Image 1 (cartoon, helix red, strand yellow):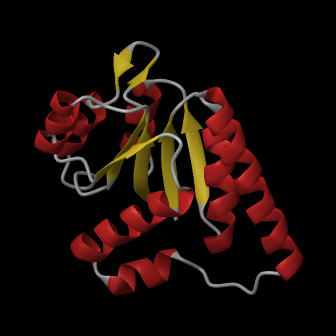
Image 2: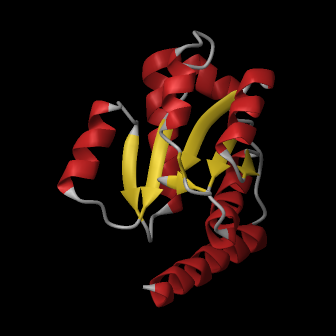
Length: 160
């Protein structure tokens, strides 16, 4: 599974990459809305988009408008990661039909769950099985990943 991350925060990338290892998934960080559009135009195997509200002073919801114009990518799940939002902002994103709005600090497993649930609805369980390669994971690796997630979450809480 490939997930596009529109967020400049290194900690967010690290946490998502650590969780992505469980399913041999890949997180691709982009630093501009234009770069995201280019990737979405050229790579047809993006399974989810996780975005901060703004990226370099440009609203990331512009990607949603771009996606809706293209049949091949319009069903990709789009998740907003943000600091707490006002009710008006939440209503706006609901109107834009984002898959989910998650507030930072966030549970990285919830990001993947939201993406998988959306893909299951629009593409079916067989698609999910094909995209996720199951592999045995060494328990020591698993313990290391969980420790990294805990550390990253602690760091996110310290920022507040």
